[in-house]
Amino acid sequence: MGRLEEVLIKEARIHELLDKKGLNAILMKKQANFSWFTAGGYNMVGIAADNGVTSLLITKTGRYVIASKIEAKRMMDEENLEELGFQLLEHEWFENHEAELIRQIGGDFEKIGADVNYDLCPNLNGEIKKLRYALTENEIKRYLFLGSKLATAVEKILLGVKPGDTEGEIAGRVGVELWKDRIDPTAFMVAADERAYLYRHPIPTNKMVKRYVMLCVNARYKGLVTTITRILHFGRPERKLLNQYRDNVEIECRMIAATKPGVAVSVPLETAIAAYRELGYGDEWQFHHQGGAMGYLSRDLRVTKDHKETVVTNQAFCWNPSIAGTKSEDGFIATKQGPLMITNPVIFPTIQ
Image 1 (cartoon, rainbow, N blue to C red):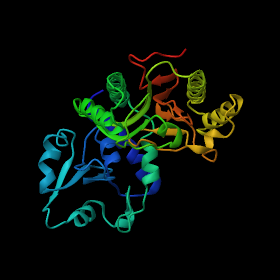
Image 2 (image 1 turned 135 degrees about the vertical axis):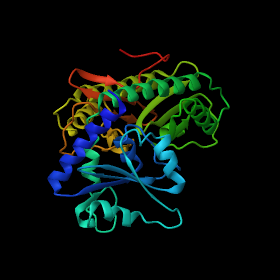
Image 3 (image 1 turned 90 degrees about the vertical axis):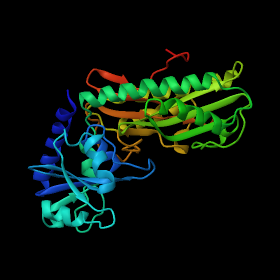
């Protein structure tokens, strides 16, 4: 499947939404939606921003990119939007005529859906997000590339950690490895020793590692995001910690096994809650969200028992059950044939 073919698949989904809503066009400004619709393109400058620096406008008869003169040439050349059939709507950076250009193509704002709050446009962010759930063949390939690179980088760096290294140094080394393949590290959690027991979201500090470190990384490649957790312990862990970790892995595996196309996304969560209790951890699940669907965001859904959505064929997920001191986390795709793992152990020992 070529990149244009992927764009056409997504364009068909947008056209269905236009018909459903009786609209003339869809405006997309978010980085996630730009990467999704352009089959891996970037409209970002700063990686931390939600919105990009250029916009897409999709009608029933055309696809457009709206850009200032600062961004226009790179959009057409390096993001290959000209080859993908996008028409450029250009404006001066010091005279923002975006709204005027949108109206010229799409008509009244009331007839243009958007993924952000924009003038009088209906905000369709939630519905556009659902169009991203079913991954294409190309997206699955990109995801597997990302997962392999991320798992390799995380495990390689952990095997080089020594007592006295700081949490921040460890995160920085992972970033160096990922940037070699133009992969953005979008979030780090690094917990040395007691911090792994105290906090569920331990952002890196200058604390030095003594015997134990938990490393969690979110990484993005061509828009797609996956997450991973790996743990390093110097010397043999105490039996209690080792048993707890095995139980933690057991909970995640039960959640993965319960994540099947057509099943409510709440089913894996209910499975986890039952497993926590069965294995003797009571309501430990209440101290941290258990994960959910992902894709062009680290979590499209943080699943609760109230979610009514069902798992879509070829939808990406990452569950992250945790017990104070341990966590288990690998991304996967829910296929009709069963879970297709995005991240896998590379050189770390595995539990069967």
